[in-house]
Amino acid sequence: MFTSAEKQSRHTAIQHILEVDDLVALLLIGDTNFGDSFYGDLRYYTNNRILLNRQAVVVFPDSEPVLFAWSNVQRDAAARRSFVSDCRFSNNLVADVANVLKGRGIKKGRIGVNLEMLSTAWYLYLTRELPHVEWVETHDRVMKIRFRRSEEEAEIFRRGAALGDGGFNAAVTFIKPGVTEYEIAAEIEHYARSRGAEDHFTALGSGPFGSGDGNISPAIYSPSHRRIEVGDVVTMEITPRYEGYWTQVARTVTVGRSYDELNKILKISRDAIERGMENCKPGKTVRDIVLAVESYVNGTKYKLKYPMGHICGVDLNETRIFPENRMVLEPGTAIIIHPAVFTPDGKDGSFWGGTYLVTQDGYERLHRAVDEVLVL
Image (cartoon, rainbow, N blue to C red; front, side):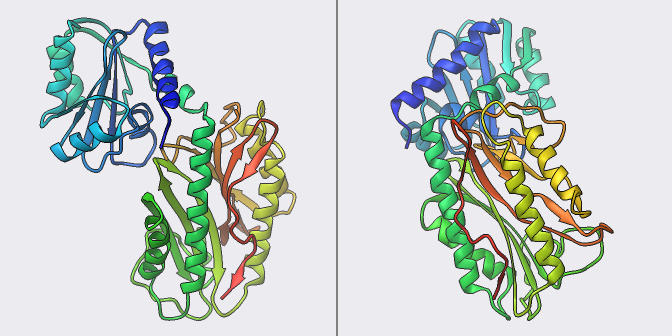
């Protein structure tokens, strides 16, 4: 999918970290979790998908990197598809990482790593085998590279967003009384999977509006066996991963009836996004967007609850959309924004949103899914 120019650009940027930070090596670890930072550094540098367990790649300043995979199947896949040519099977990743470092003559100096990914067991083993090595945090440095998206990455975001829109349309066609939440999720994910999505995160909830428990109504979580009934609200987070990159569209529909309060909440959500996106341009910060959304919602007497979204990429949540986030926006930054708006008493709420791409002079709305509450 990526060109050789993209591969070289990433390698050059990572090599710059080794040079500037005076590192003798850089250890990038990834696993199959799609939370904060658990996968993206490795995927970004290697362009290699992990199917199970962990993988690790050791990057050197003056020789070829080495990637270790936990199974021969994944080693073979990495050799065919990744940016790294030296891919090896390992049934003891940390031991093989230590051995390859020793084999390259590295017994002292500074090695960069994401300390959140370096487990205690790995740390104890590595410090025992390489007692004169200093392990230093470099994840934030890698993230600065990852946030500078290329046009090739932007095009992948666009294609992924189209899969999310198609999944929503498939759900709208399918939802009716009697079908289960699992069946709705299957329709959503079938659309994306059959068109190239490598993974899919689907959060979904159904039930009547107005639970009064201070949470999103209906509660949105993993799909269940619950069957849709007349009068239900169905809220969906539709999140395909295409060529390693996540996008997300959040939408709500109702079945057989409309709720005035819900319609008002979701209109405020949509209008608040529009107000926030006025600050979505290079040089502005995440905080600028948040404060604009917050100001708009507060002016309606309704309540805004956090978080309201996240920066997405190879990790689904690369940084949260919070008032404290002063990250400066750059062209190519992809922002998932879905403000949760609640009634003035804070008892009932809902949310709406999608993925936006920062451009050279503003932003691009990636999703084309209908921007109104449908009654099915």
